[in-house]
Image (cartoon, rainbow, N blue to C red):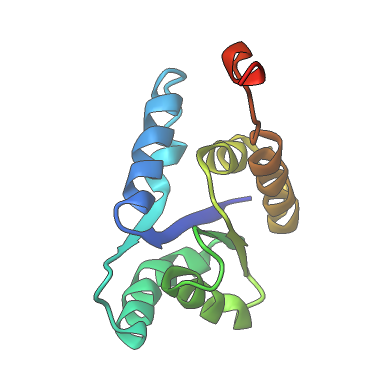
Length: 140
C-alpha cells in the first residue's frame, strides 16, 4: 500500500515539518519523508489561488491508495484549502499538525489503510503534548 502525505500550512511551517521529518528519518536511511508534498501558504494568497496550487500538488498523489493531508489551524486558510479535497474518498485531513503526527504517519505499517494511518497520526499528535512546571514556579 502506498499513501501520499501532504502538509498544507501557514508558511514556513509545512516545509519546516518536512525538513524535520527528513532529519529524523535520515538516521535510519529511510527516505519516506522525502515524498512529503508541502504547500507553505503565504499570508496574502487568495483562497481560490491557494486551492488551485494545492490541487496541482495533491493531484499526482491521488494515484496512490490514499492521501493524508495535514494542516495547521482548523478554520484558517490552509485548513479551508485542505478541506476542499474531502469530496474525494481517498483523502483524509488532519488539522492541528505537529511533528509527532507526521513522524507517526511515516512510521505506520506499510500495509495500514488510510483511515488507520490517520488515527495513528492523531494519536501521535495528542500523546506528544505535555506540560511541565519547574520547581521554582511551584513556589511562586
